[in-house]
Amino acid sequence: DGGITQSPKYLFRKEGQNVTLSCEQNLNHDAMYWYRQDPGQGLRLIYYSQIVNDFQKGDIAEGYSVSREKKESFPLTVTSAQKNPTAFYLCASSMTGWNTEAFFGQGTRLTVV
Amino acid sequence: GENVEQHPSTLSVQEGDSAVIKCTYSDSASNYFPWYKQELGKRPQLIIDIRSNVGEKKDQRIAVTLNKTAKHFSLHITETQPEDSAVYFCAAYYNAGNMLTFGGGTRLMVKP
Image (cartoon, rainbow over all chains, first blue to last red; front, side):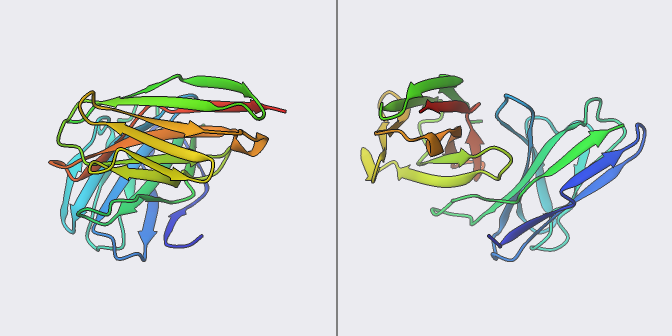
């Protein structure tokens, strides 16, 4: 059950605060993704990165920011501009090219209090 | 970009019956179609996938079919068991963007 690790598992944030979610992988994958999952809904893409120092907005990037300074790490910052940040956040990684199975982390549940 | 539609959003079957979940995609260049299973409180995990050069793939009680002309693919689960209860996601690999686009998910409930 290793390969991609998210921390923390649960996170509480006060309104108006920024918070950073960690995602680390040791699979030597080039591509990494952040998804948001809300109850009863699917996986919505926030940001993705194909290579170091490059990332692209997904469908719901507003209020979020990312960095990809290292191949192994793709942290997500939920800023105070995100109007409804309470959700379950999933990080994933995959190899580029033909074999693109995505491996997911165990998720971080963020609650704004 | 790619758009993936998944139906139904919920599906309830009796144990032993079959379950079918269908997905459509928009980008004809998509070439890889995985299915993920997410049990309650756990991470999604790949259960089966199919590539665009194959029309059908089976793995024990699970099968996936692909119709490239119609741009749809389906997951078939036979002889369902209570442990099959989970949320299932289809996805399409969007070649131009090098990313996976997921469907909205199907909550499958298998009644004992």
